[in-house]
Length: 167
Image (cartoon, rainbow, N blue to C red; front, side, top):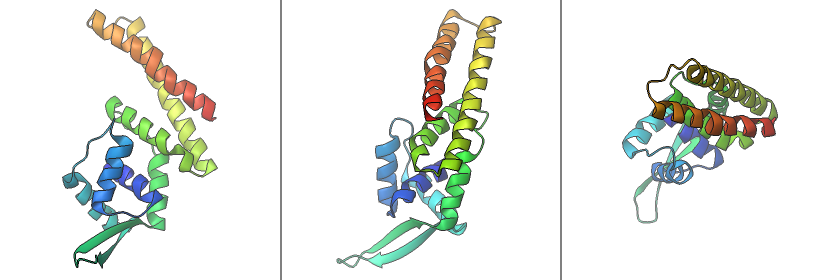
């Protein structure tokens, strides 16, 4: 997840680690709060795999400045991550749906349609499972049932409607 966010940020422009954190905080603040301690190792892994490159320069004051840029290999990896399947963990899957939807407009048309179809299938499957759980009364409390109805009728339906518009 962190690597996807870093690649998304670097896709637009090169940046320092501080800039990467600031852009993630600004763009994804509702969903993620990342520390330098999680971003730095992700950048190192991405650099090791040749997905980003590091250029070090000196500022006018003589301080070292490290600028990270996405490579062509990194752009390919970003597109792979965008079209990859969602995890089974619903919480992580919902976070990834939001991230993918926010970046979707930057994808080439063929990749965009693959992502849209994948997300549509996932949302449809979640909606069916949620509705089935409610129908079979496999809920432990009235509060749980209310939440699942809300989740199905509002959140999953909103995703489905938005994805339909994008098709």
